[in-house]
Image (cartoon, rainbow, N blue to C red; front, side):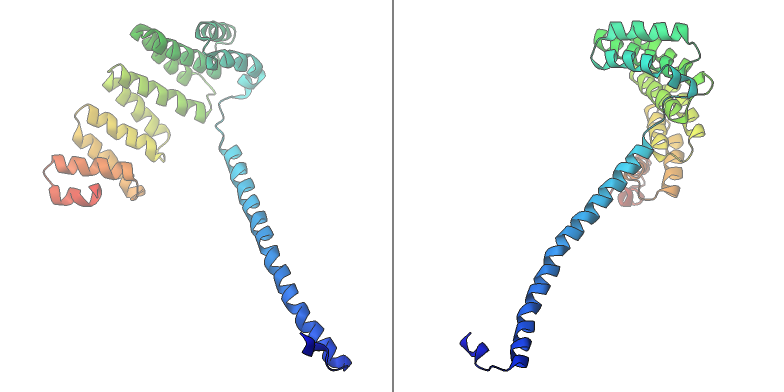
Length: 238
């Protein structure tokens, strides 16, 4: 340290000051990197949030938006577990606005929840019928149509209405042919009926478009195994 200032030469002193200054500038640059990374992470998060907002399902058509506050109030009762009140509210909305798909869907959900609470198959059948009515109304948004028919198929399966569920899922796949998840559900419906050939055809279609679909792979593998094609099934099951 003492040798740094032995000479009184101005040039030497300037060189030394530059050398001392360089590490400081490097440390400043290093410190600024995490901030840049943090900014980049924030930008990615914001983009993901924007995508999530865009992907939010559209459950209300133009007319339903005009009665959204009434539908939301009935939906709030349903989510709070006040099912009898919710069902009455949705029934009133359906009477007042028979062409409202969202009100009809809400009525079906309330019936569905109440059926589960009361363990009533009769009430569940009513919900299945109301889901169908909602899907058949004009101007149903595609997201509401998908949700309605998917729920209907699930409840049909629960009641053991396998052929009815299959018909509902076939309609769904016709309406949304690019949705692999719906095709996978259709394959399960065929398997529940013991129709392995029908299921095999469906899973072959899925794997042709999405060869990495694990759900389709494992079910296709089990079908091959049931046909005693053990060697062929192994890659799919693996």
